[in-house]
Image (cartoon, rainbow, N blue to C red; front, side, top):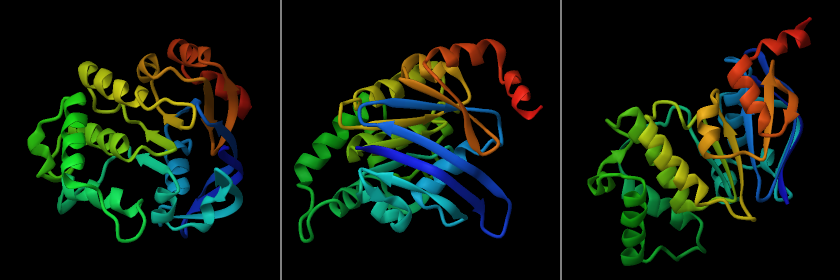
Length: 249
């Protein structure tokens, strides 16, 4: 099974249409990258898939492992295995990282069960160490006062702890220096297994040098207009998106 999107159309609520018929399939075990100019709808796609309330789906379908994502609440989509690392991670004042992650893991367990506290904290600290995160961040409120790079590492920490079946990374590379980019990418790559898929949204090839995609899609004006192998990222790096002007002609 996989993430299957057919003719997906969406708009800002009471606003303009942004997604104009997206067709995409990301099979299990594969990493697909989406590249495209600013304002083409890449981040909107990620938010629509996760059920962001600011957007309205006006047509098409989206399924994850045979389940209709569009009929689910955001919480149900998460428990079904979908994960989004935000382009701009949100702050959650008053809720510590540790408590947030314990609650998220508990939500995936049968009613009445909860994570073993000792095992949870042992795994949390080990995962933070892999990402080069200060252990004191377990007690800090989620993303509150974090730098841009710390927020991105924290998103990847959440992904590593929750182990989703389909992870969407929306410009995870923005705000990261070279060392942080390498560490974060190693964390992502550690989750690459045959039963998990990734959709990586990025402007730049540098992230794809670390997280090698199987397929690269070009997004333009609310839809996918080109699909190719990893060599497409090299072409974009050298020539930019000028070739899309041919589609506008």
